[in-house]
Image 1: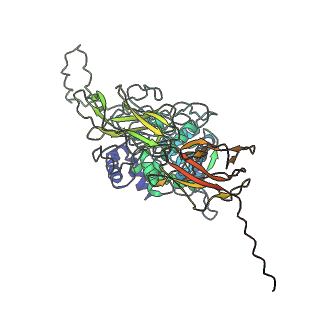
Image 2: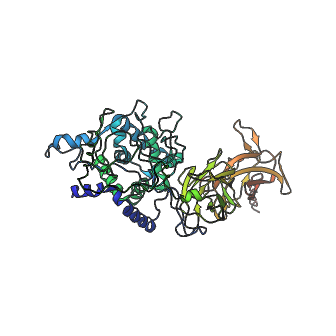
Image 3: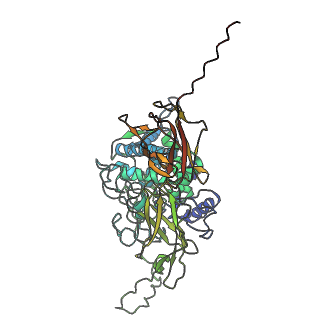
Length: 579
């Protein structure tokens, strides 16, 4: 069964189209799908049903190593004895720096996205399949690979067609994109997914610490919980959109979960087979490999093909070229891609974008790609970027999202999640792979508000002159019937209902030094919308006083306070003397 499975995996590119169709069907039948960010819902009326497929994968569906883990456990029991030639033990070894990067990424995600439950063994499984653990751990002391690890150029020749998006900054190719680094990110994905995992101030896809942390965040987006098998499948498929890839990564994940150990950098085993039919040589993967030739993992490239045999006598000579001698050979004509035809971007109906701090925006940004004649352009990648100093993000915590236009030419950005910083936020839409003027959208984050305040109790608030009130004042804030948490509030002991100025006598609060204060600012409701005021005291002035509480959003509540001397009971009458 294992051998049969291995042969099926080695078909690679031949099964890519079938796998893509299967995954597309899976995505359509499950929620959430394998999009880069966010979830499409029935509430999104702007796009047509096939809207917003994303880039499809972190790697651009580049080739990967198809070698299977050994059948025996990496930690065999004493009764079974060691695996042949120590194969299990050898394959389970992960280079020290690479292993450290995986574990540090897991620890970081445990803090920043605890609900994701990312195991470092998943990063190890993907790292094994994508680059053979950075080519057996060929990294320097900082974790940067010694020489670049590049996938083939994605020129549509047996691979996806992704024209250059980084001007060759990462892959050295200004014509087409190539997957880069030990986790094989394509430049357009690294642009938003890149992370600085070793705190050197750079986001380098060739650094295993940066790449491992980026891969962790990529797998943890969309609020996926990787302890759930369905979410785990979606996350892996989003990395490389192939059912064979999913099965292979799961095999390595389970293998590493059974046990692994650290080996010196540069001594890890190298894979021997790739999904594009090439052999694993450990060298830079800058061009597509030729047909597969059996090889031993870690032992260099396959043998070159022999030269073609000479033609037999009597074999007709090839027909002469139709181009006259001396004429220049015309360059092959390349039909324009959809991206090439885009002339401009249009707002596809995004309405006013407003949300209170901490809330999700109910409206989504939608952009339409058009030709010069105004015709819609499908299958064009639109990058949405949140600009400026703001903590507003897209769903999943990212500031950049890439979404493909649907058959109506429309791309819908993931939902925006307002942060705590208020004010205007700019989101810019641009075409990936083409220089077209960007389209800016403005989203406004307002402060948290309440439209109603109410006391949580109804006991009368009374005190004797010079005393203190026994009961604290507690109120609950709501907004449109829902709990209003984190809402700023002010409490003032006012002179009268008609005069909101602070009183100079009667009840008061105390400051940190114990001095009387009659206005409190900087108050905020808690997670349940509750606000409990500090203890109130009374001076020697008797009477009825007013406490007014106001919040952002206009909610106001006036509470009555009474300061009066305690009632004394009258003495009982004396008994009359006997007559």
